[in-house]
Amino acid sequence: MSTEIAQSALASDWEIHSQQDQELVKGLGLTSATMLVMGSMIGSGIFIVSAEIAREVNSPGLLIAAWVVTGFLTIVGALSYGELAAMMPRAGGQYVYLREALGPLWGFLYGWTLFLVIQTGTIAAVGVAFGKFLGIFFPSVSASNWILHFAKVPPIHIGPMVLGNMDVGLNTQNLIAIVVVITLSIINIFGVKTGAVIQNIFTSAKVSALLGLAVFGLFRGRNSLALAANFHGHFWSHAGLGALHDIGGGVLVGTITVIAVAQVGSLFSADAWNNVTFTAGEVKNPSRNLPLSLALGTGVVIALYIACNFIYLNVLPQDGSPTGATILERGIKYASEDRVGTAVMTQMLGSLGGALMAVAILLSAFGCANGLILSGARVYYAMAKDGLFFRSVAKLHPIYKAPAVSLMVQMIWTCVLCISGTYGQLLDYIIFAVLVFYILTIFGLFVLRRSHPNAERPYRAVGYPVLPAVYIAMALFIDVVLLRYKPQYTWPGLIIVLLGIPVYYVWSRAGQKAAAV
Image 1 (tube, rainbow, N blue to C red):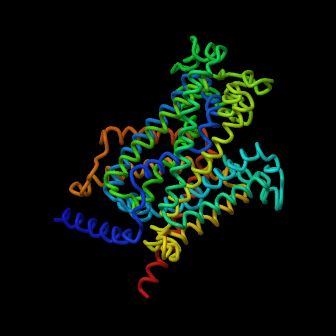
Image 2 (image 1 turned 90 degrees about the horizontal axis):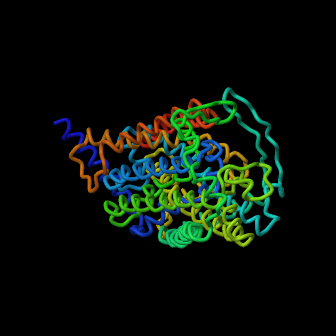
């Protein structure tokens, strides 16, 4: 009898939230949802982070292995989320899953962290990346070209953390970022269909650019020096299980551990695939299209990411010197400013190749920012509906039925991060917490299977319970390794999350008092 009561209560709660979502416009079909998955994933990371990974793993084979592990985790995560998305196709996505499986506190902590830094910080970083690469064509757009320079905050050491060490002010580079954020936020007020059109155009362009890089590099970019250095008997160099790798500061770790450490860059480059779940209330036939878009989108992007890294190894040697005079001498490890993608294209096509890559990254960054802006606002809208965010954020535009207030609140905080100089640090700090929330959400899949076995599940996670359990085990191992060897990525993230606990209780009590009145 208790199980039936629980089932009835859950069904009633989902019905209430479903009715709330009916005021949203169902404007995303399978194509648009898939484009949102891919467009949110592909930013500038794939063109940059391979340099840092190569320095950490010191092996061509392990460089590819790091991306393969990331691909496995991403696709398994997406397949697991597909069940939750089809089961609860509500605006807010992951926030809703955590709320229903583990309780409102966990949902709030996710939404709190998402607003404070995960979503807004990523949007800010992508916007600044857009300004950075625009500076290739317009040198006046630069981080050193200050319009208003407020302060230089010195580094502050708190145990393993380093805070501060940033410039605060407005320069031409972050001014461009602010313009991009404001422009896209206003465009998305005109409804999800308008935002989807922008997303589809730019995602198609950047997927084509990645595919072009892979195909052109395979047939025209092969370099005999790079092939000899990376493949001819050297692919698995330093990759034995007994090998030790220096991850900085004189710290030596084993092969499995160094792959876990290297996930910082690749996992973040493949992140944001879950953003389509935030817009679930606006997806047509969500029980079918959400799981499909997650599977298709992550599968295509991961395949492109791995292919691009093979192309990098075909064109440039992994090893090199930071003082190398040519692109080949610097290699992947020491590509200028870690711009591996630009270095590879320049090596293949000269200055024209570098310019083409800069254009591709501009398209990628603009489309990525649009996807993040469109989807993130839906989470704060859902939180406001639950009384856990500013009430006005739950208001929709009277004509276009978009969460206009939520978009504006997100825009304002993102612009603050653009000029504060903190977004880069916050992104580093939150990587650990992002993985924690993925673990908790997939654990919630097990909880709901046990507590509500008869709930309607139009799609069931492929490989359950083995693959979700493997995901949790692998992600936990990565988090433990980061906690041990990369404290600068972990403790600040934990602090940001934990600060949300007292905020939750203050906000929930205020909401209860308002409801009582």
